[in-house]
Each structure stands twice: as structure tokens, then as C-alpha cells.
Image (cartoon, rainbow, N blue to C red; front, side, top):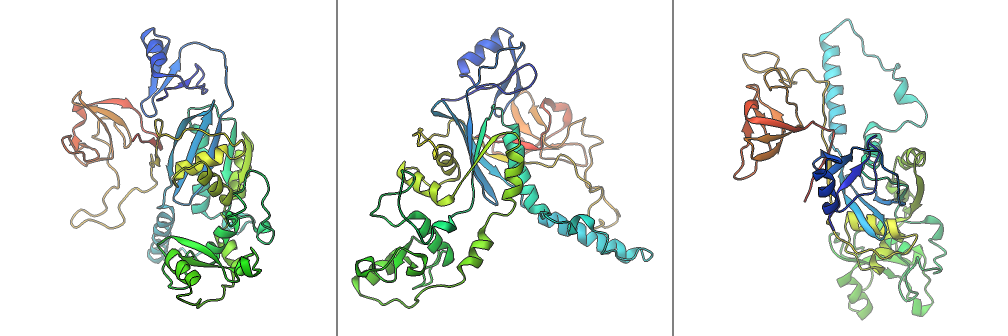
Length: 409
């Protein structure tokens, strides 16, 4: 069921409503639309806050983070957070420009010992901090009264590698290898078959000394094989080449999510915060029969503690991107032939429109301004049968730019 999101007169989020109720409120003048995607209305009076607890599960990733907000046994909102990946590239460009300026300005010697912020204890690299800040911003900006946040920590629980006793409903049945050990084995072996060295295929954890011969379920007695090699080893057609892989602790240290303490510290100030392990998510997702994806993992994370079975759907699915609303750059890096230094962005003749604005073109097409030409024309995403650009006089502003861009599927 599609949801319409609601904020009160003061801008605080309330519980979402059905489209039929939203139409009545808009028809009676008791609410006004304030955002197109996701469609959000603002009430014109102070209503009571009859709020239910809303839990959001977050499947944290370096490039894509999945989220799923649940309450009353249903998904209220889900989607992807598509992280910016150009942060490191921008920093490298700025560093190159600084070096170039120092070469031109002979009177300014290079300064290396005045970088206090980069030498202080506990400092996060800018790319990792930006990645964590994007998750924090989204959780705070969603049009839902979120009460608790559950986030996936590292893939495995190191303390349980040598004591994989099954207990509780959080683990799978005893006739299967513990998921914590299976993922740990695959991670240690770089997700590659140790027999034929293939990587992009179905991988399984194999007991070097079989359990029927007294072999134990420990990390030292497991090795990664593809399904074909695994079958051939058990049928006796081939013998194992490798006997194990070392350096496991180093791989764990490299795979641990950097910045997770920063993320936890900031989210726990406002919400009830909880962490789960990746292997727990994988087990529970398989138990409830969900396909692996970022938002399905997030749903498993949100319901892992309660064991609640919620029907998976994408009726309220919103991928989220980020758009820079301003830049410190004034000119392009390289001068243009015959023109000298060229301004990076020209908005003087754009009729007051800015990059990211939502406009109605020729009273027909709803478009987002991607860039502004030097002539003042507004450029849009290319869609077959729709204009790719238009002059400002043919456009009407619907919604001002935002650094957070919600897309609808």
C-alpha cells in the first residue's frame, strides 16, 4: 500500500497516511503539499502526536547502503542510499591545485607542519566521515518519526569462531554449518575457490578433515571451494591442493567497517541504537526466504530482534542520491583557448533557477535542472520524447533544490 508522508504545522514528522485520507485533507484545505518525492503534506493545524514506534534497519555499505523503516507490521519506507564516491577525487584535485599555486607563487613555501586537523587523535579520513555523515543525514531527514535504529556491524563475530554452539532462534538448524563460520571462511580466503582459484561463482565452506572422521567446526578446519570442486572432492575425483590459509586476523582488521564508532556515537544521541552482525542478518534473511539485496537485508536487520515476519514489497521504495548545491570552485582547471580562465558555473541569465530545482516545462513536463548553459538555458536529464533543455521563460518553479535527492522507481 502506497503511503503519503505527513508533517505537522511545526515541520515535525507524523505517522504516514493512506492516499485517500491525504486527498480529503488537501480537498478540505487542512493540508498543503510540501514535497513531491516522497509525496509529503503539511497539516495546517496542531494535531495530536499519536505516534507508534518506528524502527529503521540499515545495511551499511561503502557505496550503497540499504534502509528499511517498519512499524505496525509493514514497511513504511525503504530504498538505497547511493553514497558519493567523488570525495577522494575532489580532494586530490584540490591538492594538485595547491601544489600548482605554490609553484607559481614563489614567495609561498610549502607548509607541512601546520595541518593540525590531520594530526589530531581519532581523526577520520574525509571520505569515510562523509560516508557516515550521509547515513546520519538521511536518518534525520526521513519524513518519519523514527524511534530506534538498528545497524549492521561487521560480517562476523570473531569471539564465536572457535565456539560455534547453536542456541536460540537466531541461528540456523544444527544440520548446517554455522553461518558465522561459513562467512568467516569465505572472507579469509578472499571469496575465492582455493582449488581452481575461481571467484565469481557459488562458494561453499568445506571441512578439510571431515566431521564423520572427527573433524571440528573451526576456522582452521575449513577451506573455501566452489560448488563444482566441492562435489569432486567429496566424490574422490580430485584431491585438495591447499591445506588452509593464514593471515585471517589481518583480513578481519581490513574488513572491519571504519567509522562505525563515529556513526554509532551520533545516532545514539537521538535514537535507541542497536548493532547486529552480518552473519546474523544472512541467517535470518535465508530463514524468512528473502532474496539478497540491500533493502531486503535492511528489512532482516530491522526484524532480527523480534523475529517478526513482514511482507517484503517496494511500494514505498526510494533510492537516495546526493547533489552538491554549491561549490568552492570559481573557474575550470584549464584555461580555454582564446578565452582564458572560464567560470565554472554561470547563473546570471538563468532566471533565478539553480541546479537541482524541480521545474514544470511548458506546463507539461516535470524536470530537474541538471546544469545551466552559458546562454541561461536549463539542461535536464535526457528522456526520449521529452525536452533535454529549455529557456527559463518556459519553466515554472515547483520545488527548490535540495542536497538530498529522492528518486522513485
